[in-house]
Length: 389
Image (cartoon, rainbow, N blue to C red; front, side, top):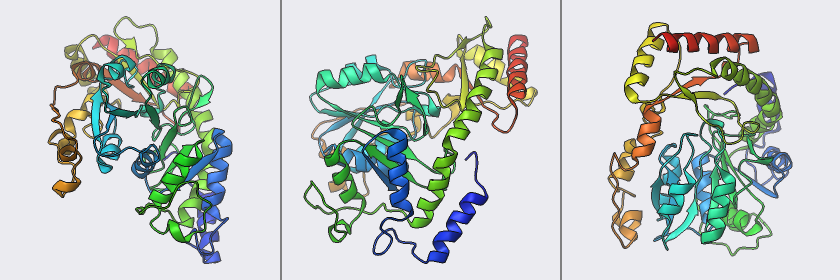
């Protein structure tokens, strides 16, 4: 969370004073509706649905794409476990694909992993870094499968002029504590397909049958992932801040990256669309893990903050215990892996190229509260420590 202040406090107070905290039964046209309209306008898409989590946004999007038992959904080896959990929640099985040096899903491995059961791909724009969407769209069209973008870490990002989340059939965002814009916990699904939106809307609200929506999909039994007007009010103010947040991040990353660029001791990790990068991290790639570990020790001695994605725990596929152990549900008759009708094999070393890349990469975080010059100085300091390690 980069910015939060008096405007959000005033927005929450406004909702409380009004006394209408529920978005329906009197709350229609209120904060949540306003946010959804504003998000559509910002992203140039037709439909948006404000939800309680990014995970629920993925689930609702997959419902809209008619994903279910027996289907396969391809996800990258480097992402939060929510990406595969979205598929498992609906009885589908996640198939894990390699990433490439950009830290996003490798289109070549995606195509290798496609079977007659594959129904969708979930590219994840990790750390605000855009995936190779043109290649993924080509593959999806060739094999007649769908794309739902996991843009949970990439609010406001773009790829070759198109907003992340709007390039595939649907896109999911997260607004939890650690995202670019936040209401503590929240998410959104976006799409320009009316049927996807209406199926997602029904699934998101078990009371949808009583709301008076003009639906193009028949009502079915939905779940519950609504948000309150308080979250809607916060997100309205956060969305107004988005351009300013990205406008502050981008020149600071550029300064840090410029100071790091050109060294013979490492390579700058490629960015698939520099202009559309959210600019939260700068990543460098070393020749092997031995060198990486040596550099890590030197950085620690100088008390320089960094992260190695290999060690992130929650974001690497070999730490997804319930997926690896194929425990898809607390009840066997709702377990995706038992519903699949075929055997799947997962292991900690199933994506060797991803393990190599993640073990040899170090991330440096854009220092949002510091000046451009200070970020440039940080980059120069990091480079000096690495080169002297």
